[in-house]
Amino acid sequence: MITLPRPDVAAPQRLRARDLRRPPRRTLRELACELPLLLAALVSIVTTVGIIGVLAAETLAFFRLVPLGQFLTDTQWTPLFLEKHFGIVVLLSGTLLTTAIAMLVALPLGLLSAIYLSEYARPGVRRVLKPVLEILAGIPTVVYGYFALLFVTPLLQALIPGLAVFNALSAGIVMGIMILPLVSSMSEDAMAAVPRALREGAYALGATRFEVATQIVVPAALSGIVAAFILAVSRAIGETMIVAIAAGLSPTLTLNPLVPIETMTAYIVQVSQGDTPQGTLEYRTIFAVGTTLFMLTLALNIVSQWVLDRFREEYQ
Amino acid sequence: MSPPAASYSAPHLMRRRLRGRLFEWLALASTVVAIVVLALLLLDVLHDGLPRLSWSFLTNYPSRLAARAGIAPALVGSVALIVLTAALALPTGIAAAVWLEEYARRSWLTRVIEVNIANLAGVPSIIYGLLGLGLFVRALNLQRSLLAGALTMALLVLPIIILNTREALRAVPRSQREAAYALGATRSQVVWGVVVPAALPGIFTGIILALSRAIGETAPLIVVGAVAFIAFLPTSPLDPFTVLPIQIFNWVSRPQPAFHANAAAAILVLLVVLLSLNATAIVLRDRARRSLRW
Figure 1: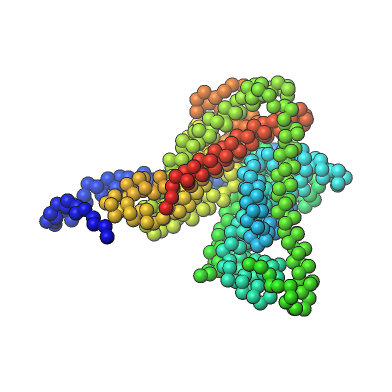
Figure 2: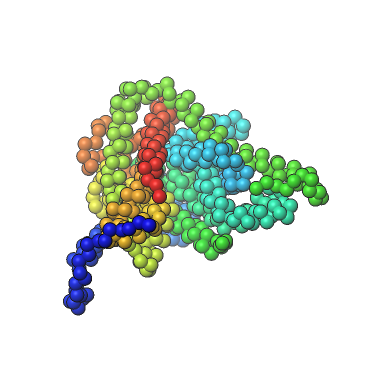
């Protein structure tokens, strides 16, 4: 039994009505502490307003000179030439081509490695593999661009005769490797949330480890996996340096992965590097392209979040 | 958890086992692909860049002659940019996270801010470049300066810092807050005297992650107008600037192999900087974790 020292409490003062109405000075000080924090949180709103404002202003100025119909239906993209065409579908085809190749690499490899890490790997193996994936995710994209252009492309050229120096294939493959950790770690998180009881129930019915992984765990974690896939597509569409370095700067309407192309992001880099004067039509194109890119990735991010919220399985 | 015993006599058990075994190998192989690629990438860069690394490579200015070119302005630019970015983004990001986690009540405003931050984290970095170009370079007339670049980068890393800091704050047990309140502390005393110090290791790790991202970013700075060829060191935030990733991009884009070797050497410097930053973060986090127990 511990005896606590009796605290020296002063006799409680009688509360007067006035004290209740007026906030004590301490509360005012608390409010003064909170205000700057609230302002900091509002910076994020200002950022969004800024992005939308800048993109909208320049894009509207662009569409006053180039009709929206031409932007959407023209099949050539030559804003930097004398004879100007503004067919966004050309840059879109380049973006979709590299994205599709990246997804062919990142989705199966990412999902399989997530299954391995979540269902098969012993703790010791996990402790080695997880940091490797984290390092892979932390390498700057300009380094991946170097790797694509100067290592992967020569390698592929030895295998595929006639492969151009700049091509969507090499850039897409390397982009897939870059996105693999994202798919893997998000899918693994989703699988980790599947309760042990589901797995044990399946084992009790005589399922093999493979059957548990593919018929119980993956379906149960499907919403998280799908959300990861969609986020991966969004990341690939917005990725810039790999494609700017390795996929070329020649806008071509093609689905051939062996020839130079140009993506939306690479075009923005190309114009930003040159000496295109501000306020010209050529200059405004990067904002029109940026708006297209922004709307595309925003839609995908929202769908990804929606899939997570809407289809999440709640387990006790 | 182990599969049922082999004596279990289900039909096709051998075949199911075999299929499982093949799948396990396939899954392992997929994971190993990541390691192999990482190894190939590092070996390739080391092979190309190591012979080019020297003291003069670090202290020389860019040159039309690949053998005399160096990364001094890029290195100084990268450091200056990160210091400025950190000075702008850290107080704002931590304050925003503290407000959301410790002060905000459930309201439409909180909800809007949360959704907005989640969406900002998914905006491609090059879009931040366009924002910086329209807002800082032109509207605020900062020109193509270090400050314009740092402001752009600060907005880019802000969502990452906020999300990581919130995570760290959330990990502090409720009992810590309640104990402080029970002693008569005000909310700000609880937050800044108890919760934030307890969350510091986590916050620190998040900050390092965010700043590593900023060090490696290239695209938004190209759009904001960092120039590749700079023959002096920036001395004020309003000077034009270049950073390591942009120098690398410039050298990779040239056709001559000698410049590619320069790019590889600069990549080595960049990776060493990033790795040592991350190592510092891990060491500091572990040390802080050891001194904090509940």
